[in-house]
Image (cartoon, rainbow, N blue to C red; front, side):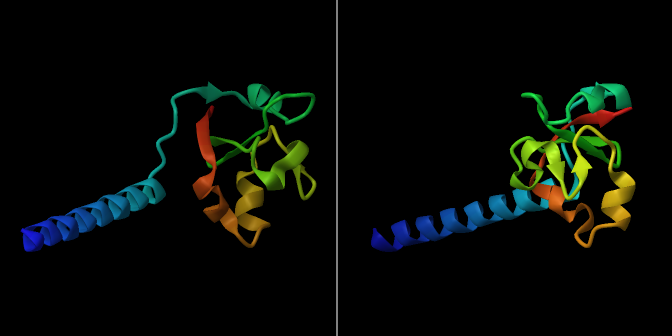
Length: 110
């Protein structure tokens, strides 16, 4: 009986590991972007000021950076939320888009 229980637990751990691995791979290879769309003018209202949420756009995806510590008060290294930073994040940062992996994709930029 103990051998059956051990086999069951080992199988459960293997299955759990596979699920975790699959989930991690699927979230990094493709983003599940909500269908909400923003114009550039609409995005600009999400500047993180006066109680507004802070959103930025990169590669046509709008990200919610409101609770990201580096974007406190709606700004980060002189950049203000509410804008499209595709060019800046790809050409002027050492980290590129890799930092967006844990940021919530909130919609799409028209």
